[in-house]
Length: 131
Image (cartoon, rainbow, N blue to C red; front, side):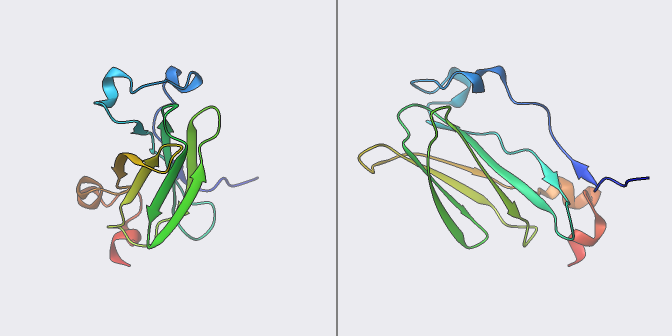
């Protein structure tokens, strides 16, 4: 009998991720990046989050800042950028910075994998909140 690692996840991706927009969609509130991060997994001994954004066609590079690290990624043709990362501290917050082809900053959005509500419910694992 195999045991799958404990996992948790949000809903599926919205249909529009199949069609990278030229400009922000109405629900993006004028931002050229939209945060789609929503998943936590525990594949081994540490909890891992996905840091995911969708970028408009104006964004050429996304910089991901999380847990003291900075990662610069070229945006692929589909516009979806995702980085798996271990959760090192329950208060860590990700910042995504979008740059156009000339290197100008045109978008910023943030994501916090764990929230105060998660802390109150001691979700996804009580030991995460005591370490």
